Image (cartoon, rainbow over all chains, first blue to last red; front, side):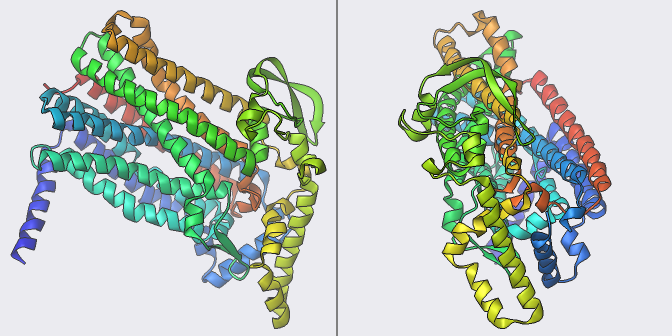
Length: 75
Length: 518
């Protein structure tokens, strides 16, 4: 148990040290990553990219029926 | 219903997917190739103990990190688009697409992201060998990520290893092995990753050349040119070889795309390979599609037959054979495929009706047909043709496919020459004397990106109108949403990705100007 705790602690310290001593470009790209992920998942995904079938139908059965309707309908 | 879907929705959805895929692909190939270049450089450092190699590795690792970080997760947007804009397609592909992507997420992504941390944070904290192993694992992980995505993409071009379930309207994987070992996937993976290696080698060569032009960091630059030159030359020869293999496979599984790549209308034996020509509308038409003649062409006699069939007497079908059929060569006319597709669609309609009225005998009989190879091989595989009104609608844009292919191949040969010259000048220690070559190497960086993007344009534009070859055309795949919504997100993406690209280029340029740490 002690060994596991020590391993986790050293891993944690490894990452913390890595982030603390990061260069200017490292900090900048992390900022970009967070902004990008924020825009993608909190704005685009929620407000602009709802899953069409999940939003419009409540069960897989309904989704299947809808797609079969689309496939067998006219072109 | 499909008749309510307007063409502008289809075109905006296609445009949006193309935009996001093109931007996403600006980040990916450099990651694929540069990761291996780092691994080679660090291996030299560990084997020789020469601190200069460590400094060189760390410099290129910085540029790798910038590209990796800014490009990461840009591909997820493509998955958003599947669910919103391409819902019929997403549902229809079922777990065929999901399984490789899940494997990618679990295996390659975690491998990559864990060891990326060791690569950047682990200098002087972990042993040299462990650090080196991490760098190699990042390279392998990044390329494995590409494998799974390309397996999924290849299935769309050559759908294999699945059975269609008429109850769920989904394709279910019947053989993971067939999906992974799909010949299109093997060719596409080897061709794509090796083209990434070439791009990264040109990136290293070009930036190193810039240092030499500026008379800065000469030792780092010449050492980097040696690594990039060797890796680039081997990779560019591999690109040529895998490209040839890929074209051969395409001629079998997507013959219409192949004929469009060659702008070949009349099939023939002893077919020459057109190195370059100018396409000119002949005045003739196939339906509403223009037929093009080759003007000012330079061709190699018999080579297309030899490269495609392995024999100069081999018959290479043209677009007219493929659309109108050629009984002598065993090529079905598209009109016949349309009839077969309509029959398959009728069976699906009858099955749906039988279920609705509770006719269990018909349900059993019709349902069994979807697992009967006679029906699936002769009818269901042509389902997608049932959505066309005219046979000529299966022809993609010939000029786009033809020119994209030729420019890509031409650039590929230019890159081989550049790598040979780089190694020759390096060996003779005259790199800095040939300033024209240093400029050429620098200019080759955008050309490498152009060639890489053109490769995807050949692949994706050449397979139009299909989203899944023979099974589903693009216009059937699209969701019934408003074109206005897609337009809005198109411009949002254009803005987001352009901002990311500007951020990447500006941070990279600043880092390159700073140079490696002393």
